[in-house]
Amino acid sequence: MSPRAAWIATVWTLMAFVAVPAYAGVTTNIDVPTDFQSFVDCANGGAGEDVRITGTLHVVIQATVNGNHVSTKAHFQSQGLEGVGLVTGTKYLVRGVTQERSSDNLNNNEAMIEFINNFRLIAKGQEPNFSMHQNSKVTVNAGGYATSFVANNKFACH
Image (tube, rainbow, N blue to C red; front, side, top):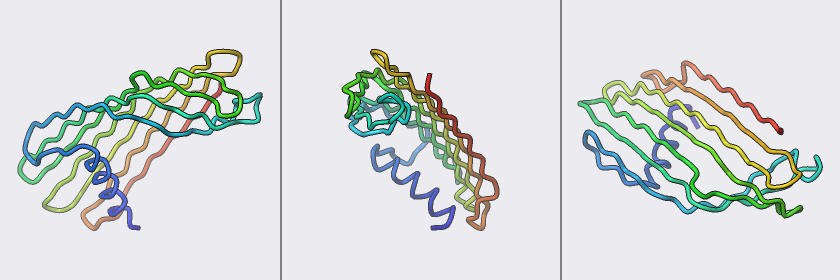
């Protein structure tokens, strides 16, 4: 899959969850029931374990169409998310904020997408806490090829 196709797939996947009409100044607020597993390598005495995370994710999406320019901004925030270690039964509070921003020129197909994610599992008990910080930015030229890509990922147990 070309970088341009991957970018388009990402945006359309996001839009599949929230229908955003194609006109200027739309803001959509939704609460998304959430249920997934995340592996925490420092849990379970360092042996690691999957943590099942459930609860609600609050999502705010802003979309603007201005002539031949489309921009979106999305904000995801945990609300009442909790986790449970599937081996140890350790309970976690889940806190985090994710932001995404994209810009697309419909005349020449140049695009940019930026993603920032901060995610924390706070253990209730003796297990260590886990934190994750990710940020990435991709710029796509008129030919549909990524001209720049920056990614930083930091994972830590405390």
